[in-house]
Image (tube, rainbow, N blue to C red; front, side):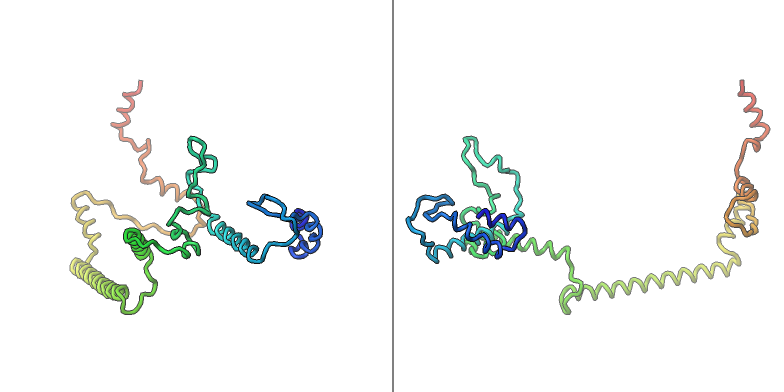
Length: 256
């Protein structure tokens, strides 16, 4: 088969490669009895295997390939291929083999392999499977709510109740805001001034209020700093020149 494989490696079509390399393959063909890919002996004739045997072999090969494809992403786990033996060197069959499942456990395999084997008639096993199925369904429902619930279902009724409560709450909030605005307007009409200005006048009468803020004329500038901006920004700061004579004298006495 090497000539055929070399043609495939070069990118040739499978049918064309087989037609071109078939004479070379037949010239090196060996006829006989084979066991586990090893030639056990010659049959003495060049007759082919019977058709049922060929079909059975192809069926077994297809089954092995299908299982390998289903479990090609099966995790390796903590047991590596270098440690699949015991202390005496005897090989150990691990669960990581994609083609191996213990007895009465093939129903747990995913895909068509698990569907080919019935669930054991054991009430304990079935109860455990139902328990995990119900748990999975509960988790799915708790994190995946339907976007459009079925009319008449519990979810649809709950959404209607929530919408009614939300509308009532928004109506009450709007009413509270209107009453608060009316109260502020009545307070302004009675005092004649705003509540903030009234508090400032009361504080100024006690000597604790701030002087009235003078309006600053706005000038058209392009956003750059000028002398007026620097003066306005430093007018409220107390520098070394604003110290009182007592503070200056005290500072001078502390100097050596």
